[in-house]
Length: 501
Image (spheres, helix red, strand yellow):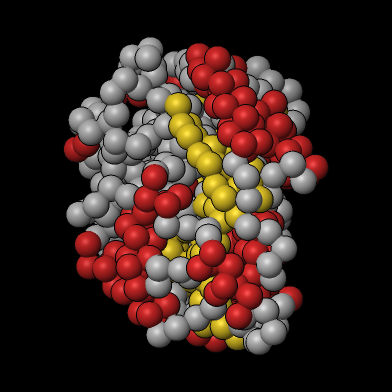
């Protein structure tokens, strides 16, 4: 700690040089979707700053803090990919090399926007390994790390960082704030005002992403306690992490990290209370589903609209292929009308539709192009006949509360109208957390009876405010909430609900 204080005091009266970087991926080890370097759309330098400055993202929050203190900003990498399968080894090494190389060249601090659930082909703790490599070239460097609420916390992450904070919302509407919390605590340390000491812990339990949102019980009391402790100044930062269940790795768990000033005693007391409360509520963190046909039939009985049908078994933001047709097929079988559905990721269909042109009538096999051998699920296309009513470039700027100001790039996008259903089909995968997935192609979901989307919780950022009713739909896919369909070979033991430790 003395070395850290000396280094920090030396930089107080000089313009600080800060490396600000982003390397984010939530890895679903059961997903068949590959994750090469191109999927991260890596940027650097001024291009990265222009893309993320003034956005509600971790990188945007870190840039805000760096600008506040007049720092010299170096951005060697700004890279984030939609959740998918294992990160390719070459991609991981390329991204790590860019960040570590910039730090090796010298800086006063680092602000790192990470996820906390990155699994590469050759290692299961992507963030911990990055931080270990940074420490190898810069042993005393002050490092602030922002993490997603769905992080898998590891000792390597804590031991090689100075400050760690995590999202406190799901949907994640506080991404920018999370970067600011971490960055500002580190700046206070640079100024000699505080001496960060971290304590952390975990409990061997899985929590369902459908029920662990911090805005609702059973997580609400736990997260509220952490927020209150930080707001009161009792600790510098307090974060709780729900974990990500679709990863077959040894560190899946619920965890918490407390950043204290100088003494860890109060932090340990808070940590034990947070984790103890979570463990006592472990049964409440599991999702109980229902047959899909019953869920759609229930939706038919509801009055008014929009009625938002949420297909959470094939969710892009958890690594889904976004082309499973089971929920759309059931909605058609039961005769739902005045429906907008999508986006469906099907580049083959988009190519055919673009070639046919607007106003063309087509019959085609939609979706179901990707097999999921990890869960023994074959792709099943759905034969659909309809009229092409719109073709777009699939780009729009987010105006809702999550990732505000960022640009979504869905690839070429088309609208296929079957009469009872308007289906949005895109070349790429995109989580529907913002109304723009529909409004950019001329569809107002607020005027529809049914809005059928592939999501888990992020849809609530844009669609919950317009929903008259919300019906969760247990569709097929590699993001299913039914843990029985997944084979976990590398998980920790014991781990609830498989064992009750």
